Length: 329
Length: 156
Image (cartoon, rainbow over all chains, first blue to last red; front, side, top):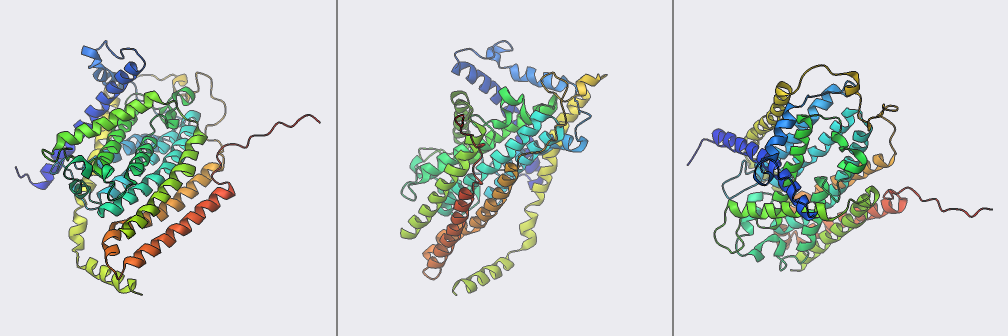
């Protein structure tokens, strides 16, 4: 089927919206159910079978709440922040290749595109927090900025290590290079660069920190900051931030899948397709949830120390070693 | 001086690329931004339209502070540490961005005996300088976030 490009794009974006909305709703369900099971309790059970209708009920509740813009808040920034947090998450999904043909826009600098839009997320949360004029929100905003910028550097550094091996920033080409059995995936290509697993682990840690997930959820540390930057947002305003958080997790895991786990390639060399992409991506999402309910929250200082004093030196050394290794071979 | 003609050639071959075709690739991306913003705006508007309406007592409009009447303004002064973090980030981030185009052309240029050594040593020098700057920051204490712990003095 060959649709004209604008129609295909529009259809893709509508599909993407549905994907983001359903993902956000059911990842919340999965998270609550998972949290319950990790803590030896059943989780949501009341609404629908196994609580499956819980997200629908939550959505209706959020939409039916009163939208409040506090008089003390900055009226423009407060309203713009939810828009700005949602848009980049959807934009980044538009360049991620779900399968060889299922990609919104196959641009040759896809990787830079993802990072460029991913960085806007930080600004949006900071805007929301600052505009709220609430002490918790502002403390949270300051934490978000210093945390996300700290983890952005090692993340960008380790991706350079990967780029030196792939030689392209086109996400589709990166996936195509990993065709074949699973030892052709970038994560296991030890013959090219034995430091690949280190790269992946640093990338994953940074991804957790960038999406403000536990053990790095200093932005929304419920026990100290109520709801962090979103404290003053009522109803759907909060809902949009919440949705964007899960959309960002999906984006982060998708990127990890594309870069390190062979994207839509099957692990056995035959029968690649979108199903493999989703399987790998949701396995990573499950790991993210698993990590959240297994590790306690870190302290803010040790969080920054981990990035600036441990991850940045390691990723720099990885970069130099890769450089030398490629020179020698 | 082998790298100058190379850069020149690269610039010339870039010229040959049809610039308007390259850029028109991004027109749909601009459209996507609009639609993505409309998606979020739509949800908020739906909430405004369908949500509860009515009188808002003054108490409902005060910033949340665990149920207390808020003390002082929320826009307070911040530790200068956060400013240092921001500055350091901008420095490192810009230097990292320089590495991206280099990383993409690294392998092909490394194979070429004419440029192999240049691309290898130039970036090692760059990274070396970056690393010296990093060590300087560390030694200056720019990376010490924790407040200094006062050691208890024995009574005189």
